[in-house]
Image (cartoon, rainbow, N blue to C red):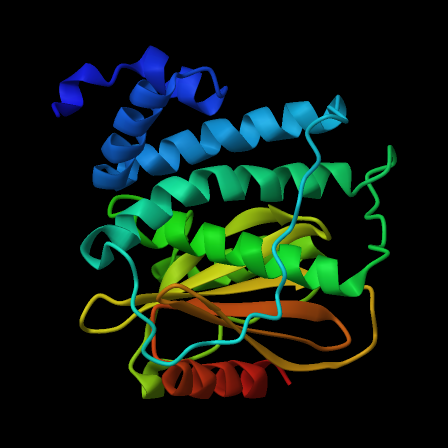
Length: 262
Protein backbone atom coordinates (compact mmCIF):
# COMPACT_ATOMS: atom_id res chain seq x y z
CA UNK A 1 0.00 0.00 0.00
CA UNK A 2 1.58 3.23 -1.11
CA UNK A 3 1.91 6.05 1.40
CA UNK A 4 1.54 8.59 -1.41
CA UNK A 5 -2.17 7.79 -1.58
CA UNK A 6 -2.70 9.35 1.86
CA UNK A 7 -3.48 13.02 1.31
CA UNK A 8 -3.78 15.92 3.71
CA UNK A 9 -7.54 15.92 3.18
CA UNK A 10 -7.64 12.26 4.22
CA UNK A 11 -5.67 13.04 7.38
CA UNK A 12 -8.09 15.81 8.34
CA UNK A 13 -11.03 13.52 7.59
CA UNK A 14 -9.39 10.88 9.79
CA UNK A 15 -9.19 13.36 12.67
CA UNK A 16 -12.84 14.31 12.10
CA UNK A 17 -13.95 10.66 12.02
CA UNK A 18 -15.28 10.94 8.47
CA UNK A 19 -13.37 8.12 6.74
CA UNK A 20 -14.81 4.78 5.72
CA UNK A 21 -13.26 1.61 7.13
CA UNK A 22 -10.89 1.05 4.22
CA UNK A 23 -9.52 4.61 4.17
CA UNK A 24 -9.25 4.69 7.96
CA UNK A 25 -7.21 1.48 7.92
CA UNK A 26 -4.94 2.97 5.25
CA UNK A 27 -4.40 6.17 7.25
CA UNK A 28 -3.72 4.23 10.46
CA UNK A 29 -1.07 2.17 8.67
CA UNK A 30 0.47 5.36 7.27
CA UNK A 31 0.60 7.00 10.71
CA UNK A 32 2.06 3.86 12.23
CA UNK A 33 4.96 4.11 9.78
CA UNK A 34 5.29 7.91 9.96
CA UNK A 35 5.87 9.05 13.59
CA UNK A 36 6.45 12.69 12.62
CA UNK A 37 3.08 12.95 10.86
CA UNK A 38 1.44 11.00 13.70
CA UNK A 39 2.61 13.71 16.11
CA UNK A 40 1.21 16.43 13.83
CA UNK A 41 -2.13 14.63 13.59
CA UNK A 42 -2.09 14.44 17.39
CA UNK A 43 -1.89 18.24 17.48
CA UNK A 44 -4.88 18.51 15.14
CA UNK A 45 -6.82 16.08 17.32
CA UNK A 46 -6.00 18.08 20.43
CA UNK A 47 -7.21 21.30 18.81
CA UNK A 48 -10.47 19.65 17.73
CA UNK A 49 -10.97 18.19 21.19
CA UNK A 50 -10.51 21.58 22.84
CA UNK A 51 -13.14 23.10 20.56
CA UNK A 52 -15.55 20.19 21.04
CA UNK A 53 -15.16 20.50 24.82
CA UNK A 54 -16.79 23.91 24.59
CA UNK A 55 -19.82 22.29 22.93
CA UNK A 56 -19.92 18.75 24.35
CA UNK A 57 -22.06 16.16 22.61
CA UNK A 58 -24.05 14.17 25.22
CA UNK A 59 -24.38 11.22 22.86
CA UNK A 60 -20.58 10.76 22.87
CA UNK A 61 -19.58 10.16 26.52
CA UNK A 62 -15.91 9.81 27.40
CA UNK A 63 -15.01 6.55 29.13
CA UNK A 64 -11.73 6.36 31.02
CA UNK A 65 -9.80 3.11 31.37
CA UNK A 66 -9.49 1.52 34.81
CA UNK A 67 -6.06 2.05 36.39
CA UNK A 68 -6.03 -1.10 38.51
CA UNK A 69 -4.58 -3.44 35.88
CA UNK A 70 -2.84 -6.56 37.11
CA UNK A 71 0.43 -6.94 35.20
CA UNK A 72 1.01 -10.33 33.62
CA UNK A 73 4.65 -11.37 33.55
CA UNK A 74 5.99 -12.14 30.08
CA UNK A 75 2.58 -11.65 28.51
CA UNK A 76 2.75 -11.89 24.69
CA UNK A 77 2.00 -8.76 22.71
CA UNK A 78 -0.03 -9.22 19.52
CA UNK A 79 1.79 -8.11 16.38
CA UNK A 80 4.84 -7.28 18.48
CA UNK A 81 7.04 -5.85 15.69
CA UNK A 82 4.43 -3.19 14.90
CA UNK A 83 3.18 -2.58 18.44
CA UNK A 84 5.23 0.59 19.17
CA UNK A 85 4.18 2.27 15.94
CA UNK A 86 0.54 1.22 16.32
CA UNK A 87 0.64 2.70 19.82
CA UNK A 88 1.51 6.04 18.25
CA UNK A 89 -1.56 5.99 16.02
CA UNK A 90 -3.79 4.91 18.88
CA UNK A 91 -2.34 7.59 21.10
CA UNK A 92 -3.45 10.28 18.67
CA UNK A 93 -7.02 9.67 19.75
CA UNK A 94 -6.15 9.13 23.43
CA UNK A 95 -4.15 12.35 23.64
CA UNK A 96 -7.07 14.24 22.12
CA UNK A 97 -9.36 12.82 24.81
CA UNK A 98 -6.87 13.95 27.43
CA UNK A 99 -6.89 17.53 26.15
CA UNK A 100 -10.68 17.49 26.01
CA UNK A 101 -10.78 16.37 29.64
CA UNK A 102 -8.41 19.19 30.51
CA UNK A 103 -10.77 21.81 29.05
CA UNK A 104 -13.98 20.15 30.23
CA UNK A 105 -12.60 19.91 33.76
CA UNK A 106 -12.37 23.70 34.14
CA UNK A 107 -15.06 26.24 34.96
CA UNK A 108 -15.56 29.52 33.09
CA UNK A 109 -13.00 31.30 35.32
CA UNK A 110 -10.28 28.87 34.21
CA UNK A 111 -9.98 27.13 37.59
CA UNK A 112 -9.74 23.36 37.83
CA UNK A 113 -12.84 21.55 39.00
CA UNK A 114 -11.94 18.91 41.59
CA UNK A 115 -12.73 15.38 40.33
CA UNK A 116 -15.50 13.59 42.21
CA UNK A 117 -13.95 10.17 41.72
CA UNK A 118 -10.27 9.96 42.65
CA UNK A 119 -9.80 6.58 40.97
CA UNK A 120 -11.18 7.89 37.66
CA UNK A 121 -9.00 11.01 37.97
CA UNK A 122 -5.88 8.88 38.48
CA UNK A 123 -6.82 6.64 35.55
CA UNK A 124 -7.27 9.65 33.31
CA UNK A 125 -3.99 11.23 34.39
CA UNK A 126 -1.95 8.08 33.85
CA UNK A 127 -3.55 7.41 30.47
CA UNK A 128 -2.80 10.95 29.32
CA UNK A 129 0.82 10.53 30.43
CA UNK A 130 1.11 7.22 28.54
CA UNK A 131 -0.43 8.73 25.40
CA UNK A 132 1.91 11.73 25.49
CA UNK A 133 4.86 9.38 26.04
CA UNK A 134 3.95 7.30 22.97
CA UNK A 135 3.57 10.34 20.72
CA UNK A 136 6.58 12.43 21.70
CA UNK A 137 9.22 9.77 22.40
CA UNK A 138 8.75 8.57 18.81
CA UNK A 139 9.37 12.04 17.37
CA UNK A 140 12.91 12.09 16.00
CA UNK A 141 12.89 15.78 15.02
CA UNK A 142 11.16 17.62 17.87
CA UNK A 143 10.57 15.37 20.88
CA UNK A 144 10.77 18.36 23.27
CA UNK A 145 9.96 22.07 23.11
CA UNK A 146 12.99 23.22 25.11
CA UNK A 147 16.17 21.14 25.07
CA UNK A 148 18.37 20.20 28.02
CA UNK A 149 21.03 22.74 27.03
CA UNK A 150 18.52 25.42 28.12
CA UNK A 151 17.60 23.67 31.34
CA UNK A 152 17.27 26.88 33.41
CA UNK A 153 14.83 28.34 30.90
CA UNK A 154 12.90 25.06 30.75
CA UNK A 155 12.48 24.85 34.52
CA UNK A 156 11.54 28.52 34.86
CA UNK A 157 8.96 28.28 32.09
CA UNK A 158 7.31 25.07 33.33
CA UNK A 159 7.39 26.19 36.97
CA UNK A 160 5.63 29.43 36.07
CA UNK A 161 2.96 27.62 34.07
CA UNK A 162 2.27 24.99 36.75
CA UNK A 163 2.54 27.44 39.64
CA UNK A 164 4.96 25.15 41.48
CA UNK A 165 8.75 25.07 41.60
CA UNK A 166 9.90 22.14 39.47
CA UNK A 167 13.21 20.35 39.14
CA UNK A 168 14.49 18.00 36.46
CA UNK A 169 15.75 14.98 38.40
CA UNK A 170 19.30 13.84 37.65
CA UNK A 171 19.02 10.25 36.39
CA UNK A 172 22.53 10.04 34.95
CA UNK A 173 23.59 7.52 37.60
CA UNK A 174 20.79 5.30 36.29
CA UNK A 175 22.01 5.71 32.71
CA UNK A 176 19.48 8.32 31.52
CA UNK A 177 20.29 11.89 30.48
CA UNK A 178 17.80 14.74 30.18
CA UNK A 179 16.66 15.45 26.59
CA UNK A 180 14.42 18.38 27.53
CA UNK A 181 10.75 19.01 28.20
CA UNK A 182 7.46 20.44 27.04
CA UNK A 183 4.17 21.84 28.36
CA UNK A 184 1.06 19.64 28.09
CA UNK A 185 -2.52 19.76 29.31
CA UNK A 186 -4.25 17.54 31.87
CA UNK A 187 -7.61 17.50 33.64
CA UNK A 188 -5.95 19.25 36.59
CA UNK A 189 -4.50 21.99 34.37
CA UNK A 190 -1.05 22.58 32.81
CA UNK A 191 1.29 19.61 32.96
CA UNK A 192 5.04 19.25 32.48
CA UNK A 193 6.70 16.43 30.56
CA UNK A 194 10.42 15.79 31.03
CA UNK A 195 12.09 13.37 28.62
CA UNK A 196 15.22 11.29 29.26
CA UNK A 197 17.26 9.00 27.01
CA UNK A 198 19.90 6.33 27.61
CA UNK A 199 22.90 5.38 25.46
CA UNK A 200 20.81 2.87 23.50
CA UNK A 201 18.26 5.54 22.56
CA UNK A 202 15.54 4.28 24.92
CA UNK A 203 13.42 7.16 26.16
CA UNK A 204 11.41 7.59 29.34
CA UNK A 205 9.15 10.50 30.32
CA UNK A 206 8.19 12.09 33.61
CA UNK A 207 4.73 13.69 33.66
CA UNK A 208 4.01 16.15 36.47
CA UNK A 209 0.86 18.16 37.20
CA UNK A 210 -0.13 20.33 40.15
CA UNK A 211 -2.23 18.67 42.85
CA UNK A 212 -4.64 20.51 45.10
CA UNK A 213 -4.94 17.42 47.26
CA UNK A 214 -2.56 17.37 50.24
CA UNK A 215 -3.09 13.64 50.70
CA UNK A 216 -0.01 11.56 49.93
CA UNK A 217 -0.25 8.55 47.62
CA UNK A 218 1.95 5.47 47.43
CA UNK A 219 3.47 4.24 44.17
CA UNK A 220 0.86 2.70 41.84
CA UNK A 221 2.04 0.47 39.00
CA UNK A 222 0.29 0.14 35.63
CA UNK A 223 1.13 -2.01 32.64
CA UNK A 224 -0.12 -1.12 29.15
CA UNK A 225 1.29 -3.58 26.62
CA UNK A 226 5.06 -3.16 26.75
CA UNK A 227 4.76 0.24 28.41
CA UNK A 228 5.03 0.40 32.18
CA UNK A 229 4.29 3.34 34.46
CA UNK A 230 4.45 4.37 38.09
CA UNK A 231 2.12 7.00 39.56
CA UNK A 232 2.40 8.79 42.90
CA UNK A 233 1.69 12.19 44.44
CA UNK A 234 2.88 14.45 47.23
CA UNK A 235 1.39 17.57 48.76
CA UNK A 236 2.18 19.68 45.65
CA UNK A 237 2.31 17.54 42.53
CA UNK A 238 1.12 14.34 40.91
CA UNK A 239 3.65 12.34 38.91
CA UNK A 240 3.67 9.55 36.33
CA UNK A 241 6.94 7.98 35.15
CA UNK A 242 6.51 6.14 31.83
CA UNK A 243 8.84 3.82 29.94
CA UNK A 244 9.14 0.65 27.88
CA UNK A 245 11.33 -0.79 30.61
CA UNK A 246 11.10 -3.76 32.98
CA UNK A 247 9.13 -3.02 36.12
CA UNK A 248 12.12 -3.31 38.47
CA UNK A 249 14.24 -0.89 36.42
CA UNK A 250 11.43 1.65 36.14
CA UNK A 251 10.77 1.29 39.87
CA UNK A 252 14.37 2.22 40.67
CA UNK A 253 14.06 5.28 38.44
CA UNK A 254 10.78 6.27 40.12
CA UNK A 255 12.42 6.07 43.53
CA UNK A 256 15.27 8.25 42.29
CA UNK A 257 12.78 10.84 40.99
CA UNK A 258 10.87 10.74 44.27
CA UNK A 259 14.08 11.35 46.21
CA UNK A 260 14.97 14.36 44.03
CA UNK A 261 11.54 15.95 44.48
CA UNK A 262 11.34 15.25 48.23
